[in-house]
Length: 117
Image (tube, helix red, strand yellow):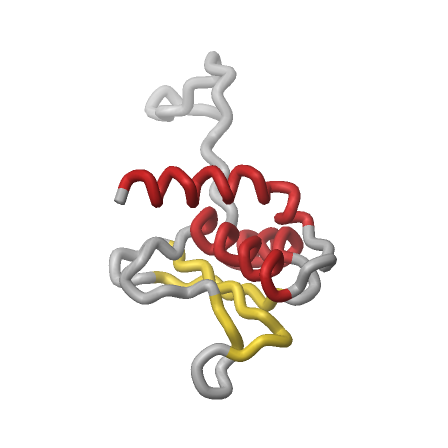
């Protein structure tokens, strides 16, 4: 039962903002990235999500797995997925992953970034 002091306005049709948990975002990104990916989300110094998509078969520096993470650069969802799409195209042609449906958009964003430099 609502009291007179209650701030709830039942006359609006607006729904409250639903924010996905970090683990839910991580699961969704892992599904999008496909079977060769291991996805982890950390928080940066500004408490922003940092997406790290690592390849389960490729190595980068030393013995570490190749990863989309780039220190000092944009490591949000779109940037990480764009890097992952390009990695799949270059190193794992023929691999299927839901994120590859966005290949054209990723290439367009890359083209736009290069034109801006």
